[in-house]
Image (cartoon, rainbow, N blue to C red; front, side, top):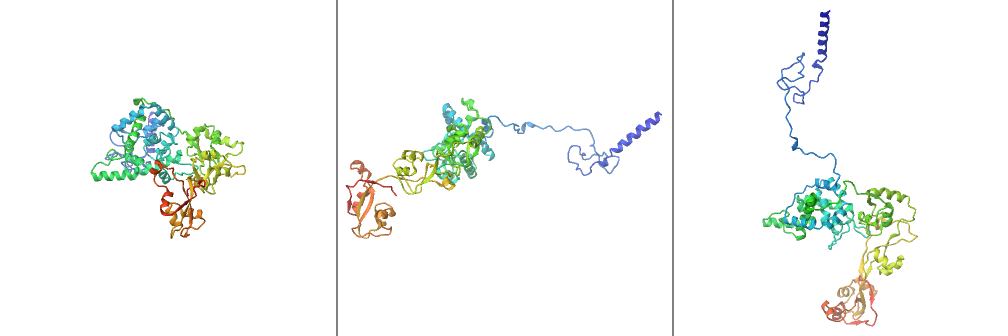
Length: 515
């Protein structure tokens, strides 16, 4: 019985070994594939010699140790603090000069200024950092508005550069920033940021150096190219610190480097940065009808100053849907605005519309035509004193009860205001000389041929007879005295040398627009 039991156990073992026959395993695995593949030179075979061995010969070998310290490790979670996110994106080479240290001292010794500047920038930094990361650009560029405008989107320089990125009018137009009667995209948060980053990417592509690109952003690419050309010709260096440049541009990158150093380590400069969460501050909301700025802020439940800070391109008291199709609101207020707008039952959304002047007018006359006071018309359209409104100009005026339609896209995108000085002119009669005509008289008295023809009710090609009286409206004579002599001879005095003048001195001066 014991023998029978032993025989059964032995038979079962042989049967189980047959079930694990390596013939069932794949035969096309290369010898060098992965762990578990046969080692080259192995003599191990299975019961069936036509199949390769499943196990390598010899004992197990230790794995080669890896030094993980040399590998870069990225954090799984993004930083909660936006300043830390900015620090992680620093990618420009550092500049270490005396000017940098001087600017560090300047900024760090003005804590109130730093606090105002960084608090103002807290509304826009997240969006700018997001755009820089999307374009794979250095995060130092998010600090550039500190240098350009102290993060004030309403800033305007003496050279007429505007917005937090300080675009000149011509450069702004080159990068598709609309500038018209109703809006200036150089001040718009989203549009100006897009244009600024486009411009800096272009400059970096030209120079291959961020310091030179920044110098070109401040000074102009043509100026930097000429400075590099001069340096090469003189056999000197062509880096940012080597070039001959204006003092403003010489300080430009050191200022940015100083702010970067303070942001990188505020404690060492005894500077306190405001807490900025690493999340969006605002979101865009579509508008489909013209709406007063004050009403939009009220419906969004946002203070008017905060609303204007996010929508600085809207310089007028109305937002035109045809030109400004979206507004920016703090993240938590966007939904409130939409629900309040849907529930609004207070009548029309705006009290303003656009009006095009049919002819050149005094502001007082234009105000009468549109039913406004002269003071209000001058104020809302920002018209300086002693000016006239040229024909074709677009004015913002009170919307009458009979007007319900919104301003058209053409007017919203192309409206302009053209002004002429309201110069005091005096009627003067001049005798025509031999072969005088409208063109020659217009050149002599520095007036428009068309205007002179209109004054005399003739065509621009008309010829005057010898001694014919020609009517002119010329600037009134300056008062006699040292000041008048210093300013030189007036147009009337110059005319007297060329032709006899019969002046209507007893008539009162009249005011006409210079054409």
